[in-house]
Image 1 (spheres, rainbow, N blue to C red):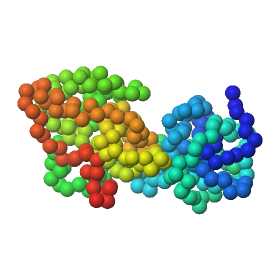
Image 2 (image 1 turned 60 degrees about the vertical axis):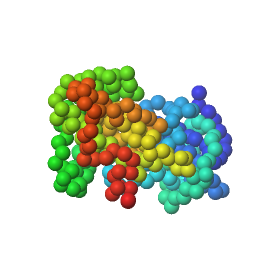
Image 3 (image 1 turned 120 degrees about the vertical axis):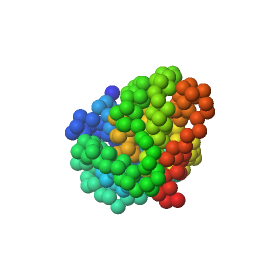
Image 4 (image 1 turned 90 degrees about the horizontal axis):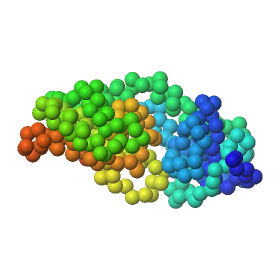
Length: 295
């Protein structure tokens, strides 16, 4: 049932249906007379959001230039929302949200729709190959000795990851053993190549753009949790990985799939009975991508 609200207050969350037949949502951060500072949330689905949907707690990053140049979608509007905006609830404004500012003006609220969500979707569709160019760029910028390590063919790597049921909403940890068994039946060189490719994909996600996706920026940041969340992105499969790589706003720090880190060592142990001592060219630990972190 649609909720009616006659006034607008800070902390109000509103949902609105977009021309793509998907729903977006905005949060009121500030009010000055009859002008409002709105923050576009990360919700963009075919159904109206439930009151406790996690994407309502995350800011949407407009990112139509690959990894660099991401920014939250925050803007001022005048007047009040049209009847197309459905009030969901009122929540507290965090300390970080109170400090947010914007010079962007979107006109009258009654005429405004949060089209940044639509433009981002169109950009991702039109720039699908840009993901692969980004990967090539990072490779080309690395030193030559690192590039001597053999990577696994992408098709083979993702076919192995699919054994985790990565297309499910949540990859199944009980299937990690299936992946370990399958990998242990390959050659030692293939096991090393899997480790190289896994490490490299985790390295690609090791940047501030992915680490700071929640607008609750005053929350404690855990390097370990960030690593485990990067593992979860890989565990969900190629399509999800490439979408997140192109759009950091999709990265969810609350996910984790730590078990992926020990797949290679367990497969090697199962095959050779020896301990795994191989060191990959790319370090997947948080802050290892020194260029991205400015270290």
